[in-house]
Length: 252
Image (cartoon, rainbow, N blue to C red):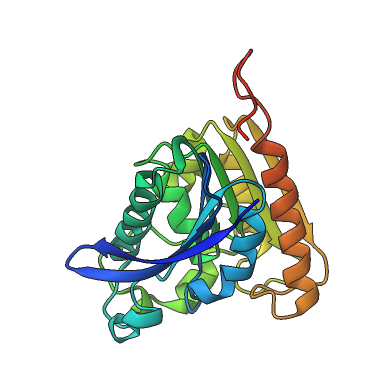
């Protein structure tokens, strides 16, 4: 199979964010990778190529406040970045090679939080979250970089329910295939947060949990990144080929 990479610009608000689409030339499912705070699309280009090898079109991009838009870092809000995710999603599904009814949204940390919220506004079929962060609903318009870190740590230290949090409410409403991945030694997103996401996704078609042993939040070692790559690719390989309705053909 021939794989191609194509740099793109995604319009979001009055700005453009850089993105790269990686995929084959035939019509296939789409996969959108959303990085975390302090991350970038560069972290996911190698993984995007591996995902594309599953017969998918994979799009990775820079949230505002990152990459070419680093100057906006202290001004960008969660609402701004959610709009970025939705704009990238729309870009992906507008490509002629992508079936808009077969899209996976995969987010890490802050990107997992945003991906969850995006399912309320777009028909995501597969949702994968790695160490998804959790934030209070309050102060939505406050620049993300100005949120109280001590307060966030306290908020994440005990379980939270869908009635208390928009991202968890989105997971509760999600009915596709769901994956959540935890790092064993994560000091940013502790276990109660993972349990909150897992419990919220009670209506998901499948609810898969994986623990990356010996890893930290940022997957700072090659071993950790390799573990996550294997987990994500195995999960995508499984769900992309599993019919969601009786008599329906595999997705890819």
